[in-house]
Each structure stands twice: as C-alpha cells, then as structure tokens.
Length: 376
Image 1 (cartoon, rainbow, N blue to C red):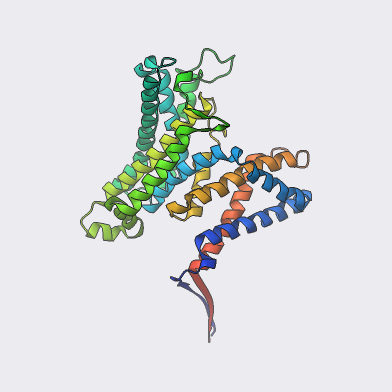
Image 2: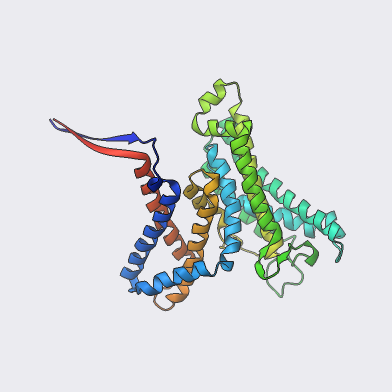
C-alpha cells in the first residue's frame, strides 16, 4: 500500500531576497505580466501600450495622492483590526458613517451657525469637531459587531458586511429625505457644505488637502506607537495570536476586542469625515453605487499586502492606488474593444486581484516549505 502526503514546514529564517518588500515588488511585476497576458488573450493589446500606460499612471503621481491618502488611512484602520483577529470588512460602512457625522455637524447642528467667512478660529473648531464626530460614529458602527463577537461569540464578518448596506440605506434615506438639498437643480442630493467648513487646498497640488495629509501621517505614527510601544498593543497582538494566553494572564479578552473594534472604526470614520470636508462637499443619492470609490473594500487589500506590518502600509497603499488608477486609464485605452458593461472598476479589481493572488502564493512559499512524501 502506498501512502502519499504533503508535509508543510514553517520557516523562521528570512533572507533579503525573500523579505516582504522584495515579495511586494516581485508580486507587482508578475501581477502586471499575468494581467497583460489576460488582456492580450482577450483583445490583443500590444505590450508597449499596456506598460506605457502603467508608467504614465506612476508618472502622474498627483493623480494618485487622493486615493493613496485614503487607502492609507483605511488600510491602517483595517490593519489594527487584523492584528487583533477582528476581521473588519465593514470599513466601508464606517467610512459612510463618518461622512454622515461630518455632514450633520457642519450643516444641521447648532455649531453650523458659527461658521462665518473669515473667522478661521471658529471654522477650525467646527472642522475638528466634525472629524471627531465622524470618527466616533465610525467607532460606534464597528463596536456593534464587536459586541456580538465579544459577548455572544457571533462571527463578525457577516454582521459587518450587512451593516455596510445598512449604512448605505441610512445615507440614502437622509439624502433623499430630511437632508435633501434645496439648491440641487432637481438632483437628489444634499446642498454643498459652506466654504468655511472645507479643508485647505495645497497650492500647486489642488488634489491634496493639508489636513488629510497630516491626519494620514498622524494615524500611521499613532498606530505604530500603540502597537509597538504600549501594553495595549501587546494585548492586541496576543489576542490575535493566542486569546487563551491573554485570558490566562488575567485580561478580559472581551474588553480588548471592543477596544480593537472601536479604534479601527474610529480611524475609518475619521477618513469618511475628511473625505466629505475635503473632496465631496455633499452627500449623493445611491451612495452605494460606487460613489464612495469602494475605498473601504479596496483598503482590505492594502492591509493584506502589508501583512499586518504598519511599516509596509505606505508601499502597499502606493501599489493598490496605482493599480486602481491604472484600471481607469486602461478603460480609456481600450475604448471600443471591450464588451458592454466592463467598467474601469472591474479592470482595477482584476489587476489588484491578480497581484494579490501572486503575493499570497509567494508569501506562503516564503514562510513554508512543502514536501511530497511517498511511503510504501
């Protein structure tokens, strides 16, 4: 009798050629090659056109700044959750709740009356309050599934996914009902927020806002310090690797779960508030129809590519934002050659998905050795 089995062994030594940055780079190159082969087999695109378009995407770096900053913020939010084995696939809904909080505070709350042109102090206070309120609503939206996981042991993934659609519906209800604008030329959407409530444009880089750049840097630094330099960070890591050990040390794992959920949701809500104040300036109807850019979902790939390493969030966000923008450029290049209904978002997801698959295979191959054993 012959027995065939696979023996999987964990590797613990890391070489430069198999380091995570090297794997990220190789995955990007191989992902692009495989993506090109798939497009070539479909429409026969020339390789020079494909790779020249990708180069142009990277060269026009200003167009990548906006998705890069928000994917960095949301990637940091999801990474915090992943560290604690809280699989936050609901950052999209928390992002929308952050937008709702900011819209309420600058348009409908008593504080909105203090927004006067030329009064920078009051405007700064209102904008800061709007961002904080957006973060708090995002935290609340994330804590609800966290509560069920901590106290009822219900898996958080389906609850988080469903709550994304609840957030979409809540936004559409407010946009088409109590918050419906008066000056929208017949469209269903809110009015524009006041000029005084908008974030500051960087001269020469109209796509960039000072406050968003500062927030992204502060969040990255804060997340790194919390995870690497505090007792809370140590508890989060132990929760993600061995919750039994955390309980045996006398800590309540339920409290840590709720803390992780709140922290992750707060960052996602903060990103949504910044998006509304800095770029969108109003809430559209049918917000779930791609009008958020699906950043909350796309940022999951940023967190996965960084493999729970905060230091790799920036290069991961660069790769994902570049591939995301590349999809839109490729749609223009292939105009007239594609079947009806194939969108730029679909192209972006193809590129990102192939790169992620290559990265996952390379990561598993780096961390494990697999041997085929035949016994007679």
